[in-house]
Length: 394
Image (cartoon, rainbow, N blue to C red; front, side, top):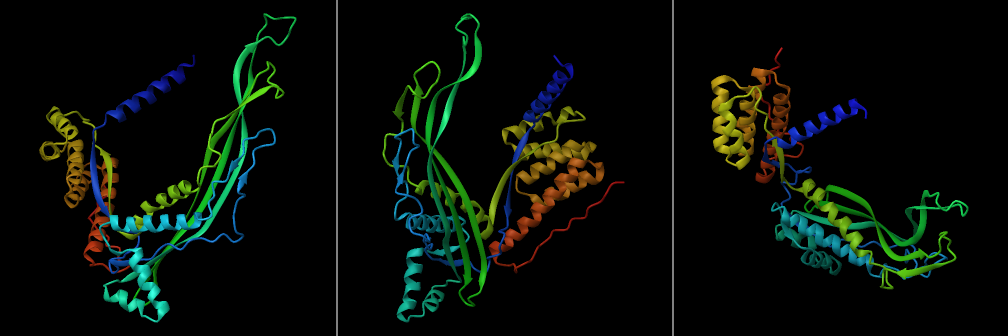
């Protein structure tokens, strides 16, 4: 056995063990939306426009199995698929905006009713403005793709058997084809686009498109070879998927549209971000802060912070100062945490403290920007950079 590999394996295992034992705390920050919509807090959401396939039905109504099988199915495509997908788009987008707790929403039913009035000569935009609407959000399914096919995949098993009748005791190990599984492969592609329009000026505030593709395999049948040689001349077929109808495409499109929502939410509204940070290990070791680590693990952050801060102020113990700053951040006092981490770095030149300081400084800048988006006290393009004095230790 190669001793170098063994040694390397033990080192890696040791590092993984140590990292798994690190004490972590949860921090939570408010982050700004990608697009500043502080001036468009009341939005009318129109129904998502459906996609029209340019050449009619995109797939055959019948999915033929391979020539060697009778595993055929009726297509998973339905004539109203485009409308079903558009309805999903409307529901997901509306719910996403409502879940942000940032906007006041006029739903698709009312919005569509108001917009329809324009066809009868009514000034629908004035009526919407009278209800306090500042922008109209339109969306559409700008592309849909569907494909279905059946394919086979050999099943193989490792066997040991005699291949020479004259030497029956001499066994050969090899991979033998024992059967074949047959699958229905369905592919779906969708592009979803939304556009927000200022109701007063008619100008587009923001627009964005999302595209995704999903595949799904469904085991529909199995063939088992019955003879010793694995020949296809003797076999038995078993239908696994009992229904004669392929699974509907709707669930594939549902998963894709649902997958867009998190990014849409971050683009349009401020949101909270939660993640874990690791405390610095107690090196050089100070017995006085052992309890602080235990308190941190138990969630007693204020008590742990007091112990770490006391040791930092008393002896300049870098891990204690570093950890005290992280615990301030975990308790929501980000501004004080930035100042303390900066102090720790200026004193020690520690690279970890520097990295954490820069991360915290960016988080504080983002949080102030997000708070201004909530209050409406922000103009488009305002960066709100937070500058903290930063020294480089020579």
